[in-house]
Image (cartoon, rainbow, N blue to C red; front, side, top):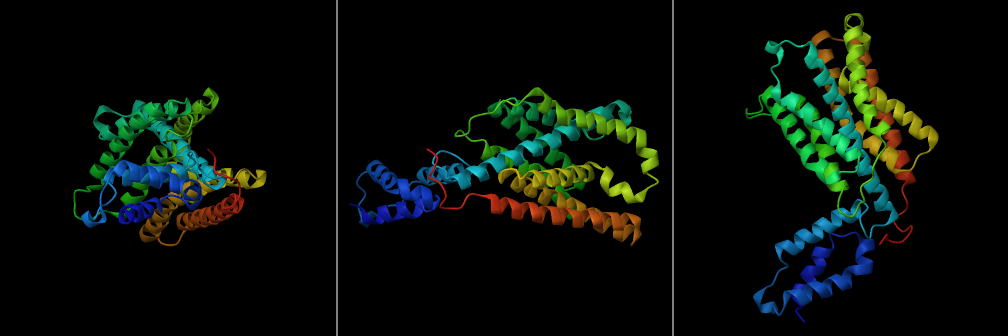
Length: 323
């Protein structure tokens, strides 16, 4: 028996949740040792990189509700998938808004081709995800995210040595939903085919928003108190606050407030940036007061949702692993 290699395999298996190791560690160690062949301790053997990568991938799948996950990890998996779905819904609505705006632009003003490409790709990525075509949705969403990040790099001139802080919030708003999509929708999760009415809702919201902005742009421009609430991120903040109130009032499963808390935390940096910029440019005034109130409301809602979500999670010892 190669004791050194066995100890190292057990160390690698510590990447897995304790509940999973309690049931399957011995079986996995035996399988790894049989596959490794005879490698005496004198040769200082180590687990293969491929084996380490497979254990790491398994650990991630289990922690987001894969086979062998406890009810607590199943809830976290549902939260991650909801973050991905709602994140893509936001980008799809914003994409429809951008595409609808092209009708009111002159050819000379269309200076953001990468942004238009990203907008055109977010829409089918979201539709594919909602209709259960997860494998196709992933590369389309990655292409949309790449175009959005490239457009952000051009816009912020990120080729320079220092990354502007204003570039961080929009980058996070792209990267986090994509990461949630790739991690949460793994092979151990069966695709769910959502109804068309739920699929079309964010797209219709993007069109409606474009019409409202077009009709009310001039009146809203005279009310600084509303400015932080009428851009895309401000409207997303308003929607999240309403959704948070509904979620808390209806006592929904723990994964819902957890997902909303994560999305609210993503919105907060962009709102803090608005607050800071309004103070630096105009000083204390209606715009700054409105920005501060928005940030305070968002912080309070994210905190309350996070507390409600963590309290609603199944305990670590509750239930057995889902096979």
